[in-house]
Length: 395
Ligand SMILES: *[C@@H]1O[C@H](CO)[C@@H](O)[C@H](O)[C@H]1NC(C)=O
Ligand SMILES: *[C@@H]1O[C@H](CO)[C@@H](O)[C@H](O)[C@H]1NC(C)=O
Ligand SMILES: *[C@@H]1O[C@H](CO)[C@@H](O)[C@H](O)[C@H]1NC(C)=O
Image (cartoon, rainbow, N blue to C red):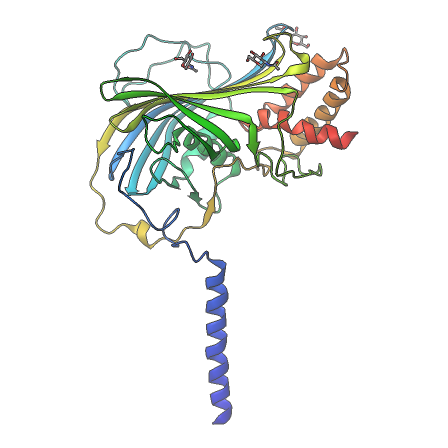
């Protein structure tokens, strides 16, 4: 009898302890079913995205790296997609992508027409073919929807499935970074620190015009101020990387980053973002080694919908939470050989380029670019940055 009692006590204790350790793994400040903080303050919102309304954006972006001054050599990737954003909960958004196409070159600019969202697809001239990996990239990007916390423009957290690949998440982080706006109100200039795909950076918002219900705002990011650009896990994992929290940007890299934003009726009508990084030592004026990225998010249509009565989503616990900061974990798509080759070339680049530039530098640089272009979409500019640590370690 007594024995049985002990056993029972033990069992109860075991279950209890188990319960505690399970609960401890959870952040007590988080609700397991809510992305972001559980409280949602709906008052004083500068944004007025409506719940249960689909905001359909056209998205296009490119990453281009060129070594001007040595011919037409460049490496480009262009992506277009339809981006759908909606708000199933007041402070939680959902991002979905479809109709994705990837190319090596841009589609020729066609005259702006009033064509309907999702209208008949205009066949591109035959010479701009899809990238051979376009279908695979498209499939992967469509596989998962992405939940994100949205507190009046601030994307504090993204919530995703365990299996979502790092590279698709990074691309979606890029989209949400251009969607993010931390101004207290649209009509007053504002300086702040924002966390996005570039790290934790100083940004400033300046209102540049207004017309009717429409406002134009310029958001400028000071890339040199960005912290946490790097994680201890660098893309090239075999290279030990020294993590410096107060990292000052590579002084030989000259960067520009801004977005032209248009707000209409308290929602983003358009966000055009541009970033340019230039390796200063090899540059005469505008020429030199330059990586540019451009993205454009344009509101094409809106559509209200009726939510399902019993939302399955409410039962579902969030698997992983992370920030908008670019994740440098190597993606499964980047094969070991390609990463190794890029690393070797990067080392060679350092030998040829630092402290004095050798004659062979342009060749090595181009070689490096053509090897790295098969890496994930935004890895290129990240690699350029990372060469700092590789060069340091190589000394
Ligand atoms: C690109 O660079 C390679 C190697 O430096 C060179 O052989 C080739 O002619 C260049 N192409 C153009 C179009 O300038
Ligand atoms: C950086 O680039 C801008 C143009 O993009 C140029 O005006 C500026 O002089 C450059 N700064 C340095 C230090 O090269
Ligand atoms: C942003 O706006 C400025 C001023 O209106 C313009 O000069 C610039 O070309 C725009 N940038 C982009 C990428 O559209």
